[in-house]
Every structure is written in C-alpha cells, then in structure tokens.
Image 1: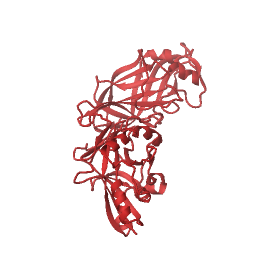
Image 2: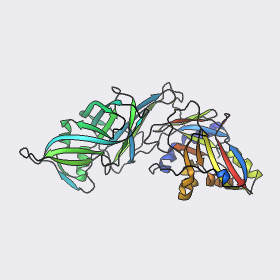
Image 3: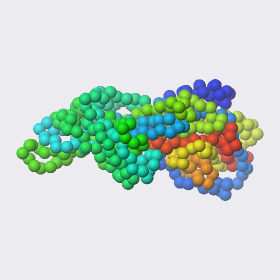
Image 4: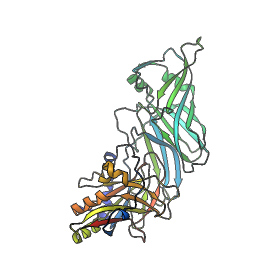
Length: 419
C-alpha cells in the first residue's frame, strides 16, 4: 500500500514509524561529508523537478537513547513546539580495567561529579543559572536492558546528592557538581564490578524550574565525564588520593525526553498534515514523512529508460523557523514491512561524501543528495515514503520548520537525467 492514496492512509502509516525508527537508527549520529558541488556543471542532461504529493509531520515517540556518545540536560519552551525536558540516567561504574573495588575501610573526604560540556542552547553566548538535582535511583539501571526516550526509573526520595544552582557560562568546558556526603555510604563498600552496580543502582540528573530555562549538551565519552572520589587510606593517613568512577564510558546510561505540547502550534498529535508546514523536532519530537509517489510514477511512464545522474532533495525552511538551524538532516526509505533503512546515498561511503544534508544559506534550503535513492524509486516505479530525521536528534535541541508540499516554495527533488 503506498501513502499517496489518501491522507487517512498516510496517517495510519505514520503511526508505525515509531516501530522502525529505533531499529533503523541505532548508530551514533554521523558526521556528514563535504559541501555540495555545482552538479549542473558536472553532468550533462535534462533537468526535471519532482514535486511531493503528500507529507506529514509524525511523532518520533520511540527513540532509542541507550549508551549514545552524547546527551543533553535541561528544558526549553517555545510557542510552536511547547516544552521539552531532558533527564539523564547513568550508572556509577568502575573503570573498564577494574574488576572489583575495596573502599570499605577508606576515608572519603569528598565526591565530585563532572560532565564534559559540548554546547549551550538556545543562546550559546548567554550565561545560564541552572538548578540541578542529582538523586540515587531506587531500582537498578541494567547494563543488558535497552532504554528509550520515554523510559524512566524510580528514584530514592531520601537520597538527594545535589540540589543547588550551577552557573554555566560560554567557554565553560566542565559541569562540576560537588555531591553531598550522603553519597559516601553508597560508595564505601567492597564489591566486584557487577556487585557494585547492583548496590549503587545509579543516578538521575535533571534541572528543575527553580533555575533558568535552557539546555546543556554533554559528552559521555570524554575523560572529564566521571565521578571523582577524594579519599585517604585511613583517618590518620594524610595522603590524598583520587579514584575515578565512570558516568559515561563503561557506564550504561540513557536519556529521557519529556514533552508538553499544551498550547503549542503542533499540539502533540501523532501526525500533522503537511500541506503548509512540516516540523523537524529533535529529542523525541517530530520527523517528516514525505511521498513523491505520483511524480515517480508519472516520470517513469514518460521516461522508462531514464538514467539519473544527479538528484537533490530540497527542504525550504519556513519563515517561522528559528534562526538557529539544526546541523543536518538524514533520509530513510520505507518498505512494505514498515521498517525504515538509510537511503543508499547514506550507506555508500563514496556517495555519503556528497550527500551533505546541511542548510544552504543561499538557497534557504536543506539540501540532500539523493541520486541513488531516486534511481531506486524509478526502478521500482513506486515510492512508499521517505522519512526525514534530524541527524543529532538525541543530543541537540535545535529544531526547524519546513515548507509544506502545497506552498509556493515546496519540498521538491531536482534531477538531471539522460535516456
């Protein structure tokens, strides 16, 4: 069944997007290639424009967030997308080369959690006063469990290790949290690595409404993301020592995204008609599902032996979009079983170098090189839908609005072909 037959049928198709996006996008977000070449100067042939016949904004409500390299902490609100909050969950793990620990007799003087900062949002030049809360989990964060953006774990209400204001300024590289002495009893034990994970359970880190609204990106893989314990072998020993527990590398972690679309333009419905506007929202927000089925069938009928030398999907940015643009857009093709896979232009390393996917200031569009994808659609004579997602949707908060398929500057695919 193709998605162009009726809007109702496309809405039904949109509801199953959550079932495949996690399986389709389980790799870390890619670092896409170089800028686009003026393909009109490279290839000789005829030009043609394919126009979309339908499109939807669909909720990305089943986003895998387990053990990704980057995360984000905080909250943000705007009129179009409502409010989103990002909460971090992480184990307290031993370093990879430590199989056990013996802190039972140690004197712990202080414990500091540090997180490597990647970025600030929405104003990278502003100093933020976040109110951060760190609590111990009341259930174990399991290493062999897959967690999604909608998952949460219970916390121990009496185990609050941090509940204070923290200033984060432009240029700061580390978020530093001096935890209360209550965490000492959690850490002061003799145990194997697995026993330690079971006993400590893990941490929940979030911002509260007592501080500024804003978001800070976290690098889980950096050596600065860790839990530093300053200790002495005994009460009479003045030797200062430090032990680095893991909060990123070697520690299972995931991110929870909480959305409140009350009063927003999108309203938080499972799917939104995209004739005028389409929404790309990260952190478990909205993706775009678009169909060129009618244009593909018409072109194939008129040009059954056409060879596509170059094809570029253009996503014009709507006037209502934020000035701060997301980095890049990825494209996935839908199949009969509703499992999405990256288009061939993203799978082939050579093609990936020309894919781009970034915003082009001159054309005011996101430009995606989709030559092999379009050739495949023409070969099959049908388009079952292309899913567009933000590349860094698990770790960056920038969102955008794209023109719908019935506007004066719509989504389109420009191709150069010969036959």
